[in-house]
Image (tube, rainbow, N blue to C red; front, side):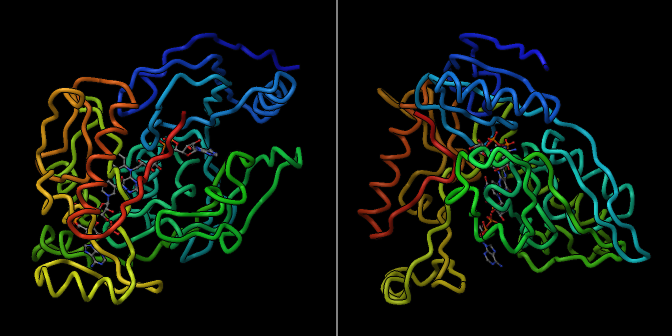
Length: 342
Ligand code: FAD
Ligand code: NAP
């Protein structure tokens, strides 16, 4: 038996990048599959809710967590298959995402450069099919390996079975809270195929040769300018997903706001949530009264900031004020991107 080192009444403030104060009734750090299984068994015996925690960069803790937080510290990576032009590598869920991005580039494995500098761990990447600067995880994900809690077995899901979509996957639906991702398999190319069509990236590269390393550095520079570092200014990245609206809604809005950015996608037209917030006057907002200690970033309204390290309920109150004002002004409903607990 692996002996679980359960901690009680643990502050989660250091473990969520919004720096919301909240406690977990129990927390356990697991660094092996055996320990993970044992932690899950324990939670079932005790009838405890579970929360699998990676880097805590995409969660809002709206209250204390009455169950067991499982901190997934599985580490390591291994090559599964190597060819002249490509490599398939399995990476454990507890590895830091950006460390692996840097490592892959150092090896001459390409495909992750646009996804540089995204906080969090490898195991969370498939949950919302992380994406940035014109690339999503789906373009390199081969498979996901994990522990199916209901079945009580390990399972491997090919990428096609993961239902990856814009900020979405099967792990937010059918497999929500029942599948612990323990590793991901990525298929990376040894041939550089830079993706530089994203406008902000293209502008940053200017006339530089877009080698994968140059792309990664350009992404890092743009991000450093536009996004606050959570350790100095607590935040959870983009707080709202970009809304996808139907053609009629898009045309109504475009007639009223000819400068509104929009992109056609399979299911309709994607709007920029950040632009809607900015138009509604939220960019650089500083909260007062009930919302004091909170705000939105001055470079990107989509990023809610929590310099006052106030409670998750207050963060959600700000989110509601924003969604209501955007709904009133544009008739568009925004959805929160991070997972809300409590
Ligand atoms: P956590 O916050 O720990 O977990 C998020 C959710 O996934 C939770 O519900 C958790 O239970 C679940 N989960 C985590 N790991 C596992 C696992 N192994 N098995 C099962 N469930 C699991 N996202 C983007 O897509 N693109 C960006 O460009 C981007 N930029 C960001 C910039 C900043 C400054 C910040 C703070 C966030 C940004 N994000 C971005 C959001 C976030 O970084 C990603 O969603 C990231 O993948 C979350 O990883 P995490 O380990 O912190 O997940
Ligand atoms: P930006 O470059 O200011 O662009 C604003 C919005 O326009 C983005 O939401 C982006 O959608 C959309 N967009 C721009 N060009 C596009 C194109 N050619 N086709 C389709 N959509 C386009 O965005 P930003 O806020 O600085 O973020 C830069 C990138 O990092 C974005 O990809 C963003 O998603 C990602 N990011 C994500 C988070 C997060 O927490 N999820 C946080 C920070 C940054 P997309 O978002 O769909 O790309």
